[in-house]
Image 1: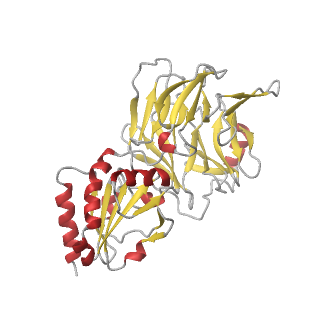
Image 2: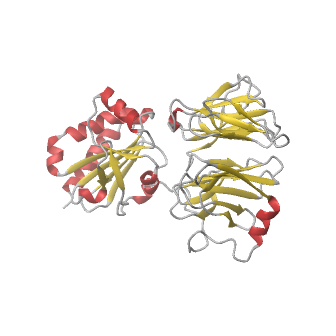
Image 3: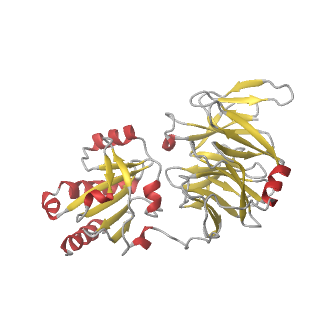
Length: 403
């Protein structure tokens, strides 16, 4: 077994026969062993929990000859061990790369992912995503969501497809009390395997065992047999949602922020870079420009001078315009450095867990939302092109003129 020892402590390998644990690969996390036992994939990052700087590396089974493969995180293997799947944080795509060929270019297998945390089915036709509040299963070819299992109150999930393609194990993020659940694909039902602060499920290569973390107190790794899991799925009281909800139905296809036009803007409660609360209710009777962005996003960088101009325009401010730049899933120090380097002074709210981004159905950035004085979304702009600036200015003037 290969596992991470915790923040900055690297990896450790446990020999089940001898019981000996051997330190392996410093400055590494999120390991996964290829099904053929040849490779260990793992993640390195510039600073702890700075997900946008993550890089995926591989080493041999003894932890020797490590080499960087690609930028990204949350690696997992194809059934034949010939492809390593990685989430590209900057492009929001799932990439496949061949670890046997150092010169091979990565291949995009899924774009516009609804979550950073995914598991590709063994036949590679579907992808399970651990989204905020739900487990989604999507067709790889079409991107269509074919099944969805609601998990209320969860910020996101860590999924793992069983090697036979019949089950998907999943757990919550750090601090979640959801525990580890298993979703049975054919029955479209799920059951809890263990509840509490347990997560990060991983299957053995033959699917006969499931391992997962116990993150309460001193961290431990637990294992459970397939027969126990199947018995849980057959229990009369199993296959229940974590809360009383109707049987899940797939969300609408291609659901994004534009669907919210004409509807009340979702409430949010964020913090500014200075640590002060930022809530939509603070801006009653104001026209709000809500801009979702990140420092690594080239179209965002192109759009930010316009956002700065809007924020500094005293005439627009006197008419009731408010600008809120919502940074998506980045660290405060990185954002502060970026603003200082570019002399930007617009107000920034930090969406570090992506919760508000999800509420607004943001699929790509920049996404700019114009909210009128009555709290209704009037226009949505996705991306930033040559005509974006005059079109946004016109939409803002119309919102300001609305009685």
